Image (cartoon, rainbow, N blue to C red):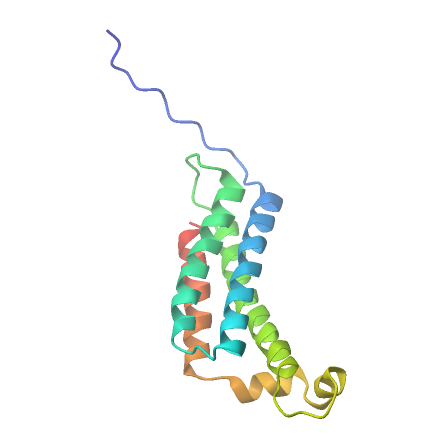
Length: 150
């Protein structure tokens, strides 16, 4: 009776960076959409921290899975760094969605949507909206994405 377990799969020498980037990007887009819509429509503030933590974790897992699959892999700095960058971009994308949706549903405005966008740039909007919650959301997205992609 052979009690030996199957040998674990040998780790790949190099991660599949393209597949990792695409998988992480898809999750980052979903995270940005959730953050942007909840901030613009429901004006959720502290709930964004939970979305940032879960979204960051999911981005990191997607990058790690895309880069290595489910097999054992060596520690490298590339995939966690990519996940952290995607986490920061998810926050920026969520802020852009918040900006556009907020302008689109602006009550009582007599201007058209393009006129509202021309009147207030994204940079001006972002400068007015930044808060401690936004700083914590960025930190959670980046930290959780980096940590879960290791």
